Image (cartoon, rainbow, N blue to C red; front, top):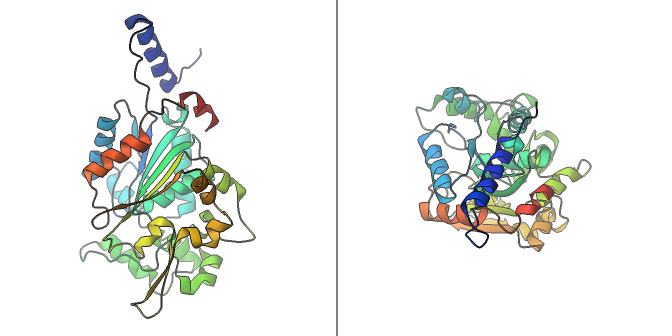
Amino acid sequence: MYLISPFLLVLALRFAQSICCFSIAGPIPAPIPLPLIIWHGLGDTYDADGVKDVASLAQEVNPGTYVYVIRLSNDSSSDRTATFFGNLTLQIAQVCEDIATHPILSTAPGINALGFSQGGQFLRGYIERCNTPPVRSLVTFGSQHNGISRFQKCAETDWICQAANGLLRGNTWTEFIQSRVVPAQYFRDPEQIEEYLEASNFLADINNERSKQRNETYKKNLAKLKWFVMYMFEEDQTVFPKESSWFAEVNETDGTKREITWLRNRELYKDDWLGLKELDDRGALEFLKMKGGHMQLDEAVMIDTFKRFFGPDVENMSSYEDL
């Protein structure tokens, strides 16, 4: 017995509908949008109301969109705990396996990806390390692509967050912490670059910063994106530095003077360690702003984003096989 992929079955049904229900000169049936995967941020859960609202909006803007919210556990509490504790190498490997074997996602010719806060750099890890099925467009909101140089403050009653921060004090670069505390694995202090390059379990690797271990597959996979869109929140006081959302490097000398090196002036871009310059040269790299604090999402901006970057790609439907 031959098994037909759900995605191809929908394509076939749409094609059949166009034959039986429309004349040759009649309207062409609407193209099918690619599935959308969402990776939420620190302290959130895959089934949170806010995440569900975003998924519903994506389906409203682009009808027919299949949305899958990434989770590391089907138990909501465990999924939240995994945003603080776990080995990112293993977590991303799990997500790669989950998506590659998903009954719908695995049969799609490609997918789109939406990352909130730390979920953005984790999706980039998915693209660089496995990318099966391949991502067409990646959009991130308030993500820490160049890491953080301060750890997030916790609410007084958030004991999981408090526990994570307690472990981090003075222990950031130990193997124990780098393999167990999630925010430590994308911590990057410009004044501790040697320690970072030596010990970082995640960010130094996916940013291809280790000169003797640069991975050409990472660059090749990221450069395949049709769009890489990075939103920075203008009044972000949660992520430090907020400019990390645009891959910028920020140095502080005395706590008040800030020296910002934007991506296009960094060696990472000039020598194109990740394919970002290649994306930029063809107009596929977008640096966008959103008013407000961290993860204060504007619905109008979200609608525009879904239309521009996640809508059905009519012109390139035949090119999905090249993703």
